[in-house]
Image 1 (tube, rainbow, N blue to C red):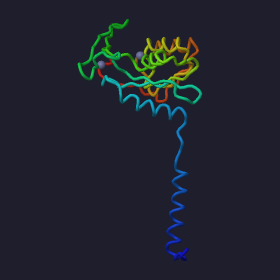
Image 2 (image 1 turned 135 degrees about the vertical axis):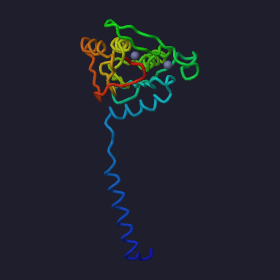
Image 3 (image 1 turned 90 degrees about the vertical axis):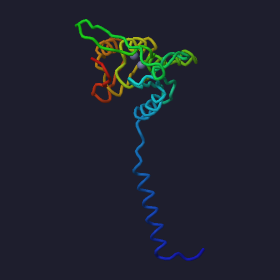
Image 4 (image 1 turned 60 degrees about the horizontal axis):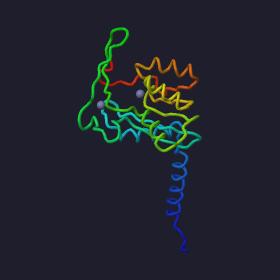
Length: 184
Ligand SMILES: [Zn+2]
Ligand SMILES: [Zn+2]
């Protein structure tokens, strides 16, 4: 081996130091962060631009199933034929508009588990915002024990109440309320 010059030795030493520093700089995501990041990618397949929601169900550090907001398989998508808007008049007289063409991401994840015979009892569900009341009821009956939502939902009051009553843990990572068109 030829004798190395002082300069090349210094270059090698610097490169080694840089490599060590970059290894130190890498921070592994927590399990919650890891599953939530993957759920974000799942949402890119969603077919309603009012909220490309996604859901991931995991247990024992393993992904069981995923789902995203979309019309039922084989049925026209919002992105192709427009939304199916529905006005809801609330108890207090206020109105809100919702697109009802899609099955919610949480519902599709649960349906995907049923389709493939995957047991989701005792699992954790990751989703974009506090699930709606219908999804909350399905989540409880599917045996999910923990729900991690990225943001809060402006109409999530009943979901929070039934989760508490049924003993399902709800963790909202960012207390900010998710916003979308005509939510009030
Ligand atoms: Zn839609
Ligand atoms: Zn829902």
